[in-house]
Image (cartoon, rainbow, N blue to C red):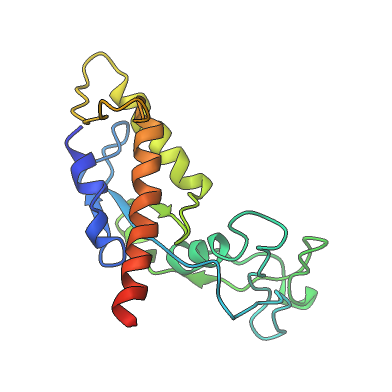
Length: 190
């Protein structure tokens, strides 16, 4: 699949989204891949209590769920969210799921709602963890590669420890790229 060469552009994980014109095979809509490599090890913490003026907000839940400090904030920032509930209910209470959340237009509002495109979040934490939406993208690519008309030109390696399958190989490469890129940024800052 030629587009994989564009998608796995390890050197540009923080710089730009990759767009695949007509990339959705069923609808022929454009697909934008937004790659993010956040660190789960941040000093900031969000209690998720929100305010009366702005409604509910994301909470830092990394101590309870995988990607609890990074995925919700990334989804909100990139995709945004629709208004939920009524202002009279007060801000969203995460424990009950009740309350108001103000609409937030994300960075890709135009691509999603004006140009009717598709935006896919590819989130790999700086310590190598791959978020569930990213794993789904890899599995979907694996299905495409497994079709009779597809050609997979991936060099899987010949060593006994080399990954033999598409999903394992590309998952390892993404994790490696995130960890190495973060390490390089730390070394450059030192």
